[in-house]
Length: 515
Image (cartoon, rainbow, N blue to C red; front, top):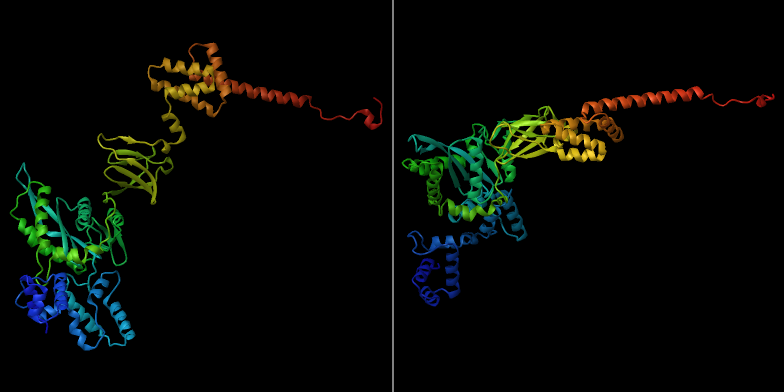
């Protein structure tokens, strides 16, 4: 039997490798191997009383106990590493182990022995066992049943604070945060902070069936809250709510809620804070203590288990954290606007009287119709009734009116002719209100839909020849009169042509007569 304990104790006293080899009767190579392996596995002096040579040998060389059986040896490090991968199970690893045994003409261990040996190894040397839970696979979340409180500075009244808890079942590493409400905003914010605390994202998110996250959950149908679903999509995780009245579906967080209620909530019962920020500072201190508390039946703590066994398996955080949004429905009014918190936002006029989905963030309003993006607006704050109208959403006639300014009016008149320019300039100068002048000019401009530029210019010239105070009404009258005269002249012309048109007449010579 190798004197493992004596080798480690002599090395701790500063004895040279040559001296240790001479004292124990082992080669320097063997002494060096034992000391290096003990250093890698964290076995340091002073040693406990039960750590005899047999214990140390089992710790440093667990495979030696099976060498004498003549069976295919088990590579525990390989098994433990492979179990961290998605969908890899002990059944699959045992099947592959049996295949290697047949290839090497050796006898394999049965599945039952295979599992037992791995379990003994994991319980003794590893922070976590990967039989039931895979690292980085699941995060379980819930509200703690117990509450904290803050004190109102003005009244001295105690204000209730609720505690959100998130746990990683594999390592039991946990996160906690106090909020003043259990509404959707607090619920989503707590998830974002939990992901930041863990430094990564799990594949699956297991929650309770709270209305803030789950709209409907039956054996046949699962309907998630749109905001909660959008957050999960942003972090590329899947929400799998626990079954109704099935606390075992999230047993880890249920257990963490109990211990956190003792070691954090109860521990802060006599702490007086005057804001939720102060309370969360104190809560974070207790949380660090909780995650650093040593395990009772195995080496390490929740933090060390997370760092060694689970952190590597988390998916990376997205480039930017999720911005909380709220979803609503609205009906497009006849003025092609929707109302959101007493503010008005335009949508394309083609969607008047249609129901649309509205996504609200702190700074944006995004409108969708049947999952199709329609438009986005900067969110308005302050005085109620403010509009946000985009020109491309207007009908053509509205767009012409909104874009009509004195400069645009003069430019349009110049494109018609000099007489029209004089009329438009007179209208702008004669009205006391610019709005009234533009309204009259807009009426004149609309005549272009029925009359040519030549006809409008001619009408303006005729009005100016008759009066120095032209009006839009007089121009309209002349345009109609000119149009009527042109129509009558066209009818008379057609009549004259028909009366003088006798067609082709054959002469007498055609019939053999004389002219």
